[in-house]
Amino acid sequence: DAGVIQSPRHEVTEMGQEVTLRCKPISGHDYLFWYRQTMMRGLELLIYFNNNVPIDDSGMPEDRFSAKMPNASFSTLKIQPSEPRDSAVYFCASSAGQSYGYTFGSGTRLTVV
Amino acid sequence: AQSVTQPDIHITVSEGASLELRCNYSYGATPYLFWYVQSPGQGLQLLLKYFSGDTLVQGIKGFEAEFKRSQSSFNLRKPSVHWSDAAEYFCAVAPTSGTYKYIFGTGTRLKVLA
Image (cartoon, rainbow over all chains, first blue to last red; front, side, top):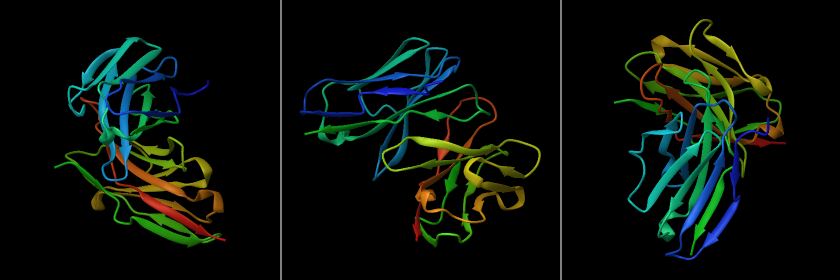
């Protein structure tokens, strides 16, 4: 298995632009999570899906952020418009269930200038 | 309130020395417990997990952890550290039912001296 695949690995964009981050979870994993990691705030859960349905989006910072999971093998996290404070590493993770733990992707390092 | 505490932000050990990283949690019931490792520029990798049974669990890369219910602790140990173990280590808890949301600790950064 190739693991959780995220793209792009690095993204540099100008303030105000739309940014789309992509994730392919491990086949057969029913849960998908989007996290953000910064030095100041550590790991923050943004949203998670179960069987493609958003279950908890209470961590999404504001309306500029949106996430979708149109099918079991693909999810996107979109920021529109982007701001410099959105600069962070964004991780996608998938899981087969609560006792199994997460498998994380390698992350997308987003820089908004 | 539910929380995970990793009291040591940084730890430095010499290669070949033993290692113990501390993790304490506050939770209503015994949760699932995990340790993850993050190497620079990488995502988090699961080292080991506990959810029932033997309180001493073995993980990958020679790590082990011991669950102590009376102390609400789940400390990570390794008998002999290798230079490649230098990384950041995160303790996490998850509920055994209901909403599947981890609580992560703030991490302990391990430095290994040659």
